Image (cartoon, rainbow, N blue to C red; front, side, top):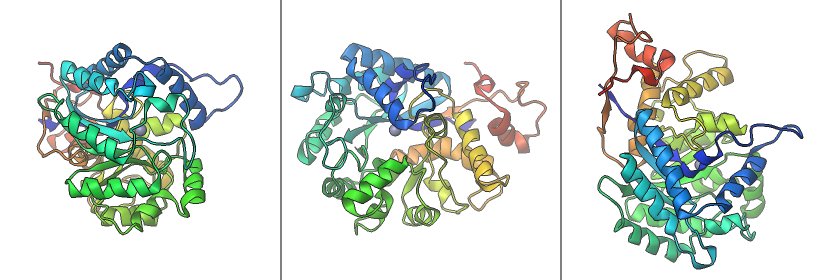
Length: 363
Ligand SMILES: [Zn+2]
């Protein structure tokens, strides 16, 4: 038995973009043009479509051995001028019906960039200020189904003014909650935040004077190594999403060979373009090998990258979502031709570097 997978960072509705935006008639595109396509999907969203997409995504996750999901949830409204929050319920119901353990991460979202108005699509995301965010958070607690829980979330330092971000950091800590935030995914984000507030996002958080051990930084693809090390040593978590970062051309995070990283590393399927934790694990390690020109890049002071990777894809995700261990487990058919004839001592290595979902024992 092996710990079941956790996707600690998901935007379920984005599964609706699968197959879209992969042709480039006018040349190379980037994250920002993909975001425009995603906003096109957002503008068509109603509660039924939101439910259908989330349900499809969560069912596919369960089939891929993912039994727990952290839903970084920012698509909240159908009728934007009322802040109706009706799409919250769609996600809660879809997870329940698909039989996946949900940790809902309702995102604070206030502006279109530092000091900028919201676009039409972004009006679907708005949380309505600090007090309204936490009022809705408390309401949602009462709407959760069994096996569901919540942690706090700020979309990014682009979408929430820095003074409010700090209040959320303090409030989440006071309540004993994790706080998830997209961090330093794209160079433009770093430039905009530095122009507005005088430093890059991770530097701002490190120097804020507030506790950071409850923070979970999603992506951190452009964070300098020394800041990643400080992030880890002060107890915070890093959450890469390798397949999505590869698809969007975000870049590759610097993951130092640090003994504490193992407990503070999680993985997410993010855009859900492809749902496979096997592929996420391999891409993470292979990207680090490509970056450092060395094999066995991600060891966390030990000697087995496969142990680090499976932990990040399962228990590390549960820790990032404030859940206890151990979680659910997966039965593996050790006699499957993808694994046999493998010695017991190298089974995990064979699974991580040569396995896929076909090795699951059918019930
Ligand atoms: Zn994301």
